[in-house]
Length: 304
Image (tube, rainbow, N blue to C red; front, side, top):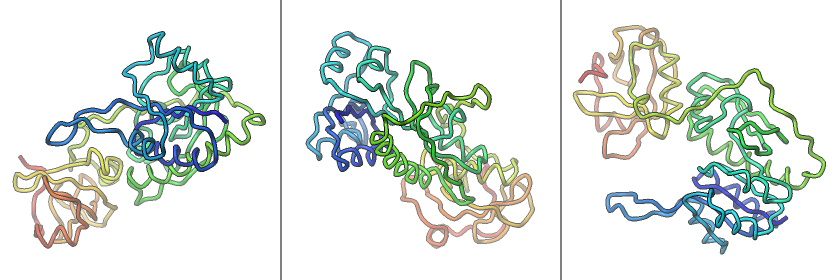
């Protein structure tokens, strides 16, 4: 099929690769424009932009798709379908209508649960036991279109957003190829009105750990915000991110270490940290972290 691909971050890259490998004619790749990044604040290409260039594909990165000129350029591609995954721009109706078979979105939740920007983070932070991928026929609403394909995956007790992100990305790549192969035979299913939730963009203010909360909530926060932006706390005035954890036995004063192995008391119960990162340093497994930063029993987190 003649396909326009629209995506920007790492999550989208396996989908682009799968479309090319399956033999589809990717006539153009749309992504967010390069933006300043790093210490030098030089423009950095997005992950999709970089991979598309490596694959020899035509890359376009308009700031907006609202103008008639951009919409005409899009229509002139004569695509049968647009595949959209974490693109980052709202698609005007003229864009939605241009491909003969419409625009298909790969969404990382079990719609109508977790419409919006951060469905993977929110699913873990809310304690969902499952999530999945929906292939959706896009309409003018926010993730409101009918669902063509749906697949479920379990959220395990140790899952982080980073690990679940990678698993769902591979699922989406496989499922979109299946959807394109079977597109004439798929029956769109309208989303129900009940069960709608919105996955608001993660605010960095949510990342500071409140040790007075129950261990179940703290564990979900740590795993749900890993690797980005990273749930954080302080120890002796220095900021530390915790990137992986699990529930542990023990009770004590909130924020106080119960041993020398990063078991920390919460408002109810405790968590055991298994991965941590000091400011300006790389992430480390707990044992490696403790070799460089011993945390004796009774140490207090979250002060200052």
